[in-house]
Amino acid sequence: EVQVVESGGGLVQPGGSLRVSCEVSGLTFTRDVYIDWLRQAPGKGLEWVGNIMLDGTEKNYVDSVRGRFTFSRDNAKNSLYLQMNDVRAEDTAVYYCARGFGSAWNFVWGQGTTVTVSS
Amino acid sequence: IVMTQTPLSSPVTPGQTVSISCRSSESLVHSDGNTYLSWLHQRPGQPPRLLIYKTSNRFSGVPDRFSGGGAGTDFTLEIIRVEADDVGVYYCVQVTQRPHTFGQGTKLEIK
Image (cartoon, rainbow over all chains, first blue to last red; front, side, top):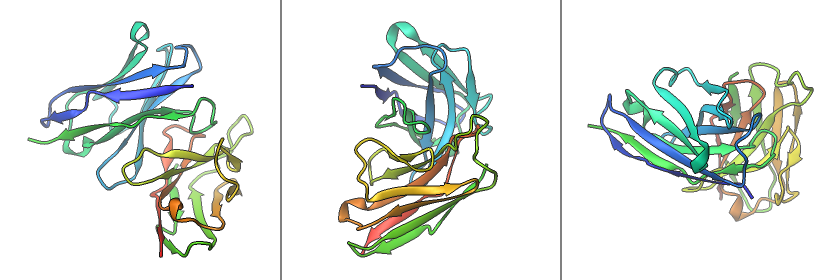
């Protein structure tokens, strides 16, 4: 069974940086397997932030975060990371990692971690 | 691709049938022949759960009261014999193209 657990959320000032983690179990870090990052602002709908192929060779970002957010992975720790730089108030959201919501293959969706951008 | 859901809110009586529409601004037929349109259900304070994938396939454990249909740019989620536990927000999402995009969500409320 595939499981993901997010951590690392918190309060960050506008223009600051924060790194959120996603620990993955039950899934091999190989090619052609993606983990998606999504977010949900308070009281709002779901937004896809981007995804990373688990071998690290492909990363995709939504336009609103490209150049500010970076995905990375650490195979030894079975973990993925979302590095958030130059954050803005509109980045305030619950951040989720997930996969398989398109094909149902190894579907999983984490509980999320909350990031608040405020001075 | 812009995803448009209607209605945005739907008050229903237990036992009734509800239908949610999702329209995409472009065809969701992938080059591999599949149509990657999914439906998710999110209860308050919970992460979303997968209901339907590839337009009409029910995910494991989802009751057969839930069904998905459609093609091209027009899709529907139907829930028959609505139960109190069905409350929450329903989202359609397209995974055919990046960026993956969601509908605004339809809030299902029990009268």
